[in-house]
Length: 207
Image 1 (cartoon, rainbow, N blue to C red):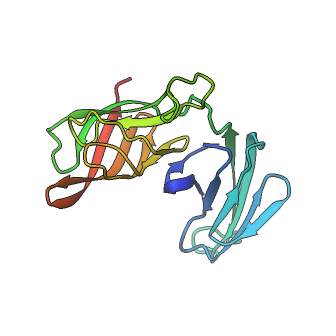
Image 2 (image 1 turned 180 degrees about the vertical axis):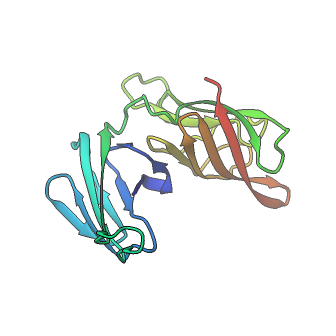
């Protein structure tokens, strides 16, 4: 099974609360799926989505019972029923320890030798930068290469980001997420006038 946060960003075991998390089961040869999220929430279907409120925190056991045709040729007593339990840990929506924060060095997939850095960080509130009581804002800077103007309308999950405004071309980060704890993939759009180009940045954490 896998957990997918808002914006389609995968996470192996931890997510912010206050968002919808999708649960995805394996494909063929499985044909039937029974989920239990926590103690009482039961669902069916290969994919289901659970909306967690801002008060739910801590470990949430997720059990999946998936059925497939028995493989008696290899396993004499195989009943075709597989059970898997994983724990999804929910942390507060503004927990500053999200691993997506950091500085990553890498390159676009179409120019692997042309390296640069991208930084994702929490900073002063964008609308009220001089108000210490205002919630911090999330920023991403460095896309495209050499750009010093941050993306300011960041949607951030425990392991992923999106952005709808900012950067040097005013285009968006469609999806960014950690593929491992220290590796990132960012899908974004840039403009080489007059053409809008889709790019993929692949980076390794340097700080």
